[in-house]
Image (tube, rainbow, N blue to C red; front, side):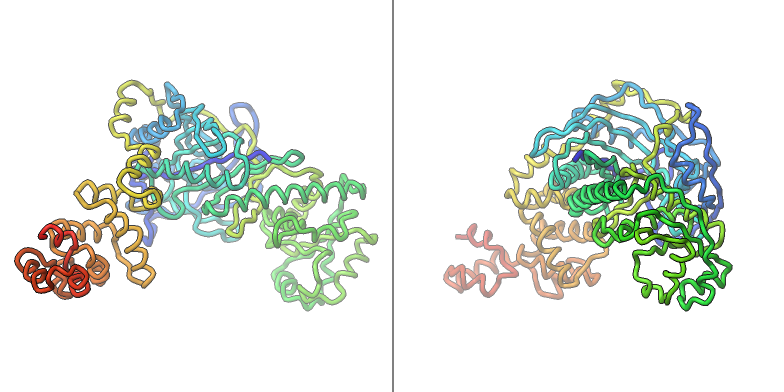
Length: 588
Ligand SMILES: [Zn+2]
């Protein structure tokens, strides 16, 4: 196996080519809606990109929703882009330095053709910032051949029949793209590499956090198979699963193809036959509905495929599923094939009638599509195209949440990049480099070392991965004991959450809590009680007063110590929430 990784991480701040904020307009209504169609054009090399063409053939309409605070004319491609966002570039330069990569002298913005409609321009702007970097891992060094800055695409809202709806709030958000060499050894190593790069990105404190802000694309190829790109893996835990399922899929596909070659089926030539009459009285609800809407049932024979369409290639996904995924790209809901159970569709003797009509031999198979005539025809063309691939096709596949993948489109060809003429290049001069160094955060490795000095190893590791790492650093800078800050963030908050106690704004609550704590208002042990009171919307002082949690110090403390004859255990049993043990020691 050869395996490499591509990580895309959103950068916080402003968009890459305009001044709109890089924030989603969640819960807001669009103020403008625009419909567009895209058309493939020849690249400077005189080629049409095959991925673009595949998308164009679907003749889709794209609807774009624009939002008042997140969009301007630039996202709608109605105004030329501004120069590249310098702050975002500095963050990518900072990362390039951490990967020990060679930084380019001039950042040239390029256009990468993207014709699924997710960019209003029909291309994505991208620029190489550095190359030839490296990453230390438990299984040796991995190359980082490319570090780039890119603009994020639009977010998909829904796909209706001929229309795909996109939101423009996300479009243009800066992304850093980090690519590794295909030197990843196995699934576990893949996860390690992805995790480490993720931690390095987060350590900058300048990247966006939360679901969807980081995406992993995995490139896998096997010796006899092909290169496949698995797109959009979000869950790091599933990375080993994706690689092992993909390797097995390719192996099983090769076995299947060998069997088909033995049966001498290639090249498949098959005429489409209208078998609507076979189904005219069908009691299948699916067929009835489609026929009522003017649909037809078309069929093709697949020579020598009998019994093989049901071959499982991924858990729960068969060879028939692969054919079906290609057919879906012609806009049909799926296919019906002869290796399926006819009762699944409530068929009677329709299958045998189709076999008769197509004059099938024992080990031949058939595929049916029920849809409007043009769509049905296009869908069966896709099925035949896929069935004729007597090799593992190079594909881009979507990562599913169960570890399997689904065909998305052919792997993009090479004619994808051409220069962006609307945005001038950026010269990476001494000034830009020194500005980058000035605003540079402590690197992941350095942070690991410095956290190791103030926390135990386990807590240092948890803090490094915590979404509240920045808050932790702020609290420590204010004078909060590091271990107390860390346990409050990583243990107390988590156990409160388990009890259903949540904050609208955890950061704000913790900052408020520790400001009062540092003033000596309450004891350490009272923190969980105070937090649970604060979650109900009260401020720290109110909770302390209401729950009677004022810290006991001075004369009152002396009196208690005297009363209990200095019996620490007895004192703490009575006043655990109100006395800090360290205060007693001082008094002794
Ligand atoms: Zn804008």
